[in-house]
Image 1: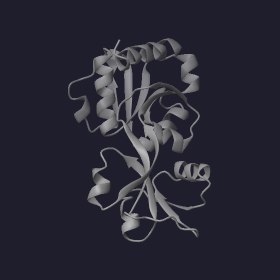
Image 2 (image 1 turned 90 degrees about the horizontal axis):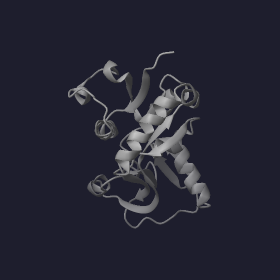
Image 3 (image 1 turned 60 degrees about the horizontal axis):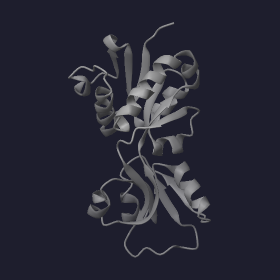
Length: 210
């Protein structure tokens, strides 16, 4: 059996912060690692292979076993509901999920519409609140929805709040904090337990400042 560990990573900010964590944990990753345009990066000296993917796809790759482990935002984990183990909060890419809308928004009794990249997460939240809403799935520029009358509110990730402010929106409700998690394929956890446990231990020591 190959001892190479395949890790799915989301492109962008999470990738950059996760790479820093791995380096601090003692993994020797090439200096040009973050600048590569490759979708699959081999690091033979560490017996690691990295798959770079869209954030929403990372849990899918891990669930289906094409990646042994991965890094995914808690927002994606909630939305995708994939059959993977979530073993460590990496405490990177901190932000939170929130409901936003135009200033002075008043709840409507009939057919309120909510736009989001996270339809499942949004539906679960409003169901818990006892509010019936129509969810409209969008893939980008969620802030547009209230501005053009497509939806009354949006559910989206908030980091600094600057994007909301620049588009004339305000936060209405905070749903929950979001960080990135280390996830593992259940079969890989059995087959490569020693390697995965070692990686988790090394990352845990860095995350907790040990």
